[in-house]
View 1 (cartoon, rainbow, N blue to C red):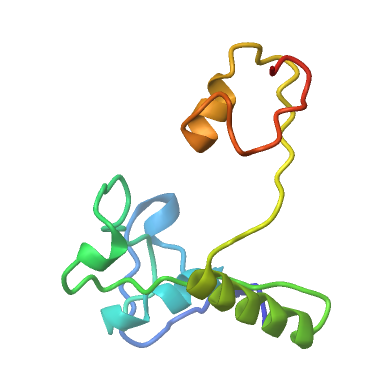
View 2: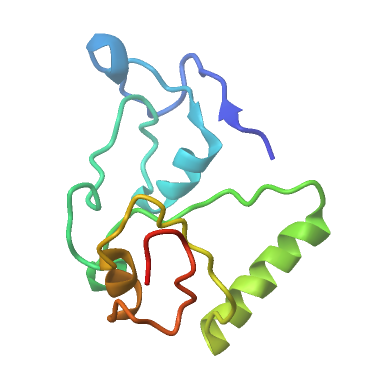
Length: 131
C-alpha cells in the first residue's frame, strides 16, 4: 500500500482555502482512510479531529465521523497475520509471562508497588536496589 497521495490540481468539488495548509491536498493514505466517513468532495486543508484532547473512551463517541486506522508493517503478510491473531488471542486469554524490570536507580520499592500493588511482589525483585 502506498504511504502518500500526490497533490491533485482542479479536483472536482474541492474548495482550497487561503494559507499554507488550507490550499494543499496531498496527504498520507492513513489520514485519508480515517476521513472516509466525512463523505465530502473537499480534499484541501486540515479537518478538526474530535478525538484530539478528549478524555472519552473511543467507544463513548456518538456518531464520530473519523475511523481509527493503523498500519501494520512486517516483512511478510504472514507475519502481519500472526501479529493480528496473537493480539486477538491475548485479548481473549490475557498476557502471561515473565517481565524483567531494571530498577537499578529505584531503591524505594515504588516501582514494584506501581506494577503489582506491593513492594514485596510476586514479580522477581532481584534487580539491584530491591530487597
